[in-house]
Length: 142
Image 1 (cartoon, rainbow, N blue to C red):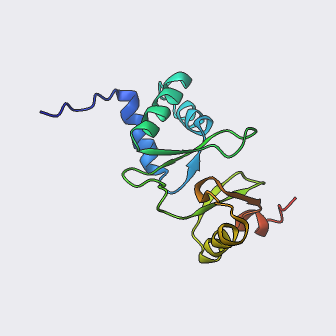
Image 2: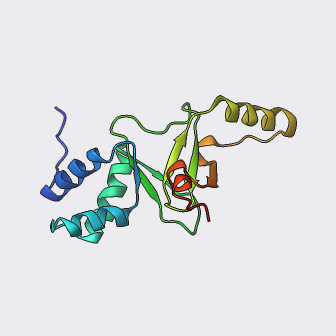
């Protein structure tokens, strides 16, 4: 007999909110601020602890871009970034958004680096920095 996972009311609220964020990246602070604005009784430690738990369960994917940025999370449910999914990430330096990029041209660059330079690039950890289309339209390209 398989034992059902125990979920608290706070965990249910958190999962409900995270399902609404599917396809978007967020930080633990974004989640904490959301619950503060909605007057939900979910503490900061509970948010952090449960985000890490959901990462270990494969429900969230965690991205650590660099040592100067907060970790980003993405609700993936049953689908998450896996090694066989070759995609890269774009990070907007204005709004901080993290964007998935699947592009055959970048796959060619990856193959070139391997073949001609003996360097194997990790696409899940490769991030290109710049300005996203939305911020570019607003003229916010620093």
